Length: 406
Image 1 (tube, rainbow, N blue to C red):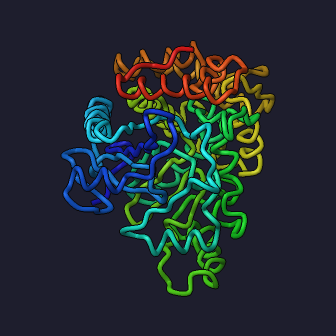
Image 2 (cartoon, helix red, strand yellow):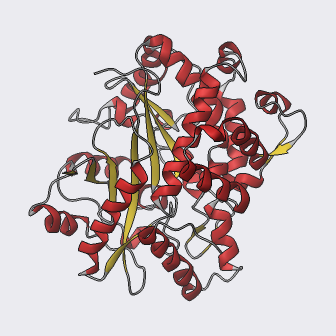
Image 3 (tube, rainbow, N blue to C red):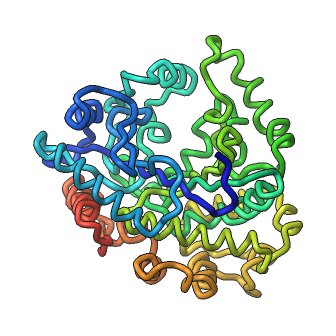
């Protein structure tokens, strides 16, 4: 069934399994699924939320079981499932850990690919790209799926999403520490994302999708080159161009939706859903053309947007934006940091969010991204012991649905 713009939503959240004693990753998702389901499957329907496996054996994905019209109930539903998973894991000394990257994982020795359903696809990916690296095995995100009914709606939604993508990490960055040290990037997940598939560069492109605004052009400009590039690798013809497309927003014409993928996972589901609700309201504002016309939105080349995105993944909300044309979209006349852009947007549409979402967005705008708060809590002490202490607090925040305070 095809839905109209903003009629329904789909949300996906990814979490790591770690040992409670030392926070080392634990590749035990299959055992979790056996405990819940009696057998290993790639998906478990649990009412309105579905559990599924990911590429690696220590990551579990929770997602809305089909499209939902109600964003307001989602944080409670996700929390319920998180608590249920933790209750299964606790018996084995394991828990879920939020944030977009594990700060101490050695992906070259600790990565274990999912060995069950879809294993042949994961094995092929591993053969082509070597998935034993941070960019493949140490990345957790939230995906937002938004519907479009036809080409006219796709044009509006794709144009708006492209404009917003560069500054989203300023709100959501949560991956500042890898290999026991500050990476220099507040959103290191997205820094890896850019070059993850360097063997076949067209799969990711410039992260910001190209200027294509209808299905036919999308197939010609994006899907066809991907299909051609993968042909010599995919000898058994098991890879689908919808999955191979790895831009920061991917268009799924098989289900008439665009999936936004540049959002790092937060410390609790209330923060995630608040960010999702905020992004959706801003996209509605852009689609309405109240800020800037559709033609102006479409005029932005991916290279221009990629330059902004590149700066934002480094410094998140404190990134200074000096592109006057980009600032003008948001009614800003002089240089401003990303936090200022989001504050301006919140002033416009904040009242359209429910009270719980308002509370969480206001916390983020006041206290900074999760990356900023993690770095503040670490106080430049990157000893294993201190990192474990700080990230153990993140695990508590997830279980208790609390915001992380340094």
